[in-house]
Length: 556
Image 1: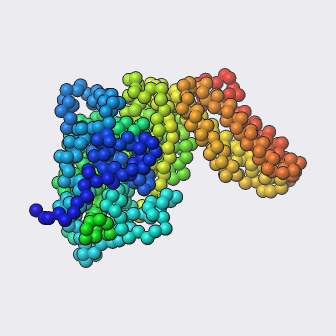
Image 2: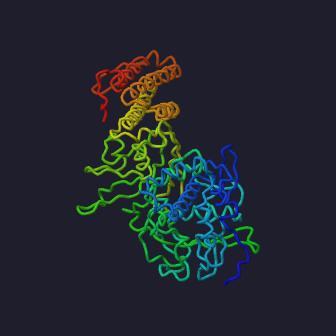
Image 3: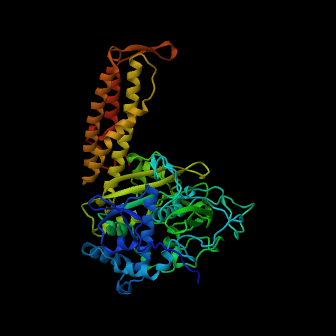
């Protein structure tokens, strides 16, 4: 066996950047995470893509370990296992089953193992025996999130940093031309031509946060996964070579969440204290751009009318939109197959010709648990939405979508989704009201002597100001239609306060008003007063608290 000059075990060495229950940041090893010595709240690494990728690695470890739990055979079903586990973690942070599993596969979690380095190929090489600088592995700047060491030249990484970025690259690495690996038959002229981005880069990540790491792992576990022992992660498989795997279709969530989209090799200094270079080549392609690959439980899927045929429906993982805000984030969370919760939600996620989008399995599982008298009844949960934004051909990572919100769990417990409809309805009313306010601001400009133009910044600022109020409203949501009425009243009060502020800012000329020319030589008088009357009329027609005769199903 080849001599190993140095080692960096992800099991024993601290490398995951975490926040504890007191808000302090630490580096933790895999053993630290599962042995209960740290009270870990969440992962808080270099950016949210990296955090999400590492969390999914922890999930797979958790799933695979508990498949070996001898008590599984004694349980009636996977739901019983989940409920037992939830009760267990209330009093015990240490997970002995995972610790034993990590010990079993310890060799495969060594970043510098001479034969099976973690998520790498040991002897990967190009025909020129060259490699790239380590910054090839690390995007120095992604949108508004600085990934690492702002303003400092990146010449080397610590092993801990390299491990984090290695996992992130396997999940999110952009498409584009890569170094050509010797032995890969796909290489032409020393280059590896584009095969697409990493799997997670195709998805719209939905991460449910518990009060601690143990709860988060369980809340993001769909119980049936624990009983599928034919689905293997990368460290339980035969080590990859420079060639693409013969099996091109992921066999399950463990295979998919550790999918090796790239063949990678890290290069270190002589002592193994710094990682100074990287060779990054093509790995396993995701077939059909992810069409009908349903193994990822943490993303919604959209229906494709263009790709579907009379004999086969086609769905794709649905990433979140780049301009995602609270007001546009509800769709992936509220999707309920077979339930009409609001036409905007269905349309934006690909509902055409009667085909429903598919919800993230974690959200469906949460709904199922709540129907049975869920463990979180009466509480709100924190949900984080994460996506990578690429350029048109996915060859560059441009930005990161990262949005968090609190959500009333009981909304998922209803057979008839009364509360979900209320949330969709209230969000829709707020978006429309913001449009009216933007129009109103444009009319004030016109009344003061300028040219009418819709004031997008006014509408956006109003939505921003309403976000914390809406979050509070959702946390306390217990009724359907009556709750919408209360929100409607608050909404009108807030917009009228804002409209009065805009009048004060518009000046005397807007108050006096003027005649404006219209078609066919007609004129129309416009002033701040007439603009405000128009706004009030719009609100009166839109907002349901003005009409006490409406039924709860209004707007659905």
